[in-house]
Image: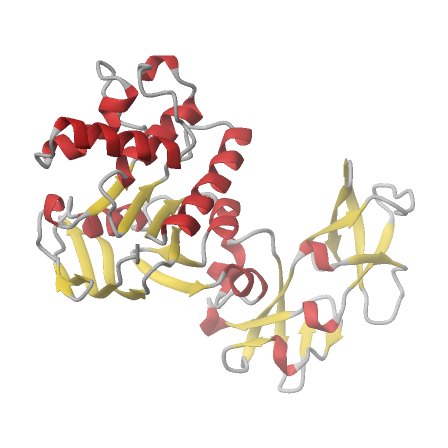
Amino acid sequence: MAGAEISVRGLEKSFGQLKAVDDLSLDIPSGEFLALLGPSGSGKSTVLMMLAGFEVPTGGAITIDGRDCTRMPPQKRNIGMVFQHYSLFPHLSVLDNVAFPLKMRGEAKAARRRRAAEALEVVRLEGYGDRMPSQLSGGQRQRVALARAIVYQPRLLLMDEPLSALDKNLREEMQLEIKRLHSELGVTVVFVTHDQGEALTMADRVAILRGGKIQQISPARELYERPANLFSAGFIGEMNMIPAQWDGSGLVLAQGDRLAPPDTALIGTAPTGAATLAIRPERLRVTAPDAPGALAATLEEVVYAGAGTLLIARLADGTEIRARIPSAGLPRLSEGERIGLAFDPDALLVYGEAAA
């Protein structure tokens, strides 16, 4: 089945004096998997609750498949919803839990039990219908919640941090399971998470929220490799932020190094005056402290982690800089040692003050 097409225009939500969502607009094409990502209080769950109909917007409009759903109650939107804590009925069997939405829609018992069994097959829980929720693992209970959400074939599936209660291995397993379901069903998915890796792994696009506003909405690779502003750069993964000055032809670092980043390194318009040089730790490599083009630093800590080693160093102006280096072939390094940190030109990103 084709997924729903969603359009949000000027969406706002206030709780008293607090504006949780502020003039938010976005389009979600049919069948897309969109992740809403941001820190606590960024508005991501509030956006999801308004899409679901559990919160009424203060302003703006929501259309689903061209139909105005801004103030439509949840039961009329034909959406599936998966919550963080499963919300299964402990006194009902797995099959009856999955069939419950169909019972509420007045479907005959035989038909709803058949469709519930089919939904359990989709989430790979065939044969579990007679069990009680207490007899299942956390991952299995989340699969039941997924089956219940898709049993009536919604075109839009909303998920509010559904994997946060699972341990690391189960989370990774369920990430792959949800991606498989999305691919097989063709349903549109809006997925709220605070886990960066989860968003980058699962979603077609990721929207970063801050203070109820979208900071950036991009495919995962673009989001990681070319963050649109300093907030996105600092929020997604690790990023070294080095203060600098732009003098019209290049960057001058506080410790005196001069760099001439390529034009492709500039994010937005060319800065005037204060700027920030951003480099991912994995784009750095160790060299001699006096190597041409390298940043000279004093090593403060060496953290061996198997395949990779984290180096924590400090530039002459006091700025901390981190490098993640493959452990294989890395020479023995000591705290207090002077090292050089080299990089390729395409590793550099330059932000002006307006990009903050």
